[in-house]
Length: 111
Length: 115
Image 1 (cartoon, chains in turn red, green):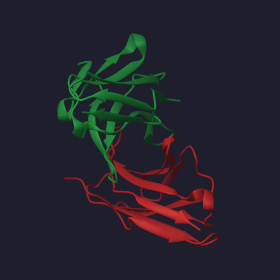
Image 2 (cartoon, one colour):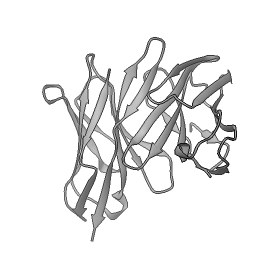
Image 3 (cartoon, chains in turn blue, brown):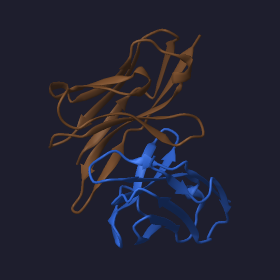
């Protein structure tokens, strides 16, 4: 089975902190994704990566950056956390043009 | 750009009743479409997918969906609801970028099942 592992289930950070969310997949997938999930808004794509060191902006990239130095690992970075970034963050991976497999999510609270 | 719209943010049915969750898509190319389910405090799980071929697609847990190009729809159905079907359901479409592809989701429909 494909496994996508997010480093934390729950995280509390202070406003202005730099925050790293880590994601690892074990199936040699080319694509990796970061979404945020908010009630009534569904899943919104922040960034995705289609290869090592390659990235593409999603629909809501402002305030975020990403890093993919190894194929299995994809990091989401909040440069300066703000309260409006309090949300559920979901990582996923896929082969090209196929379904994505999701991690359990990280619930981030910024205070 | 490809997108999906889910009609109805909340659907309530009685146990044993038909489940119908609506999804319409927008795409200038033949779409790849998906339905996912999310149970409370869990990640998303794939229910079924349509890529090419047969337009009626069967998934897990008795769900199925029919791709109708003329109606740009991909509605999810189940003949008889069970209490365990209560969850949030998301329709998704693959969107192609300059160098990669990504799944784009609708806003979700919460299904409630009453006894």
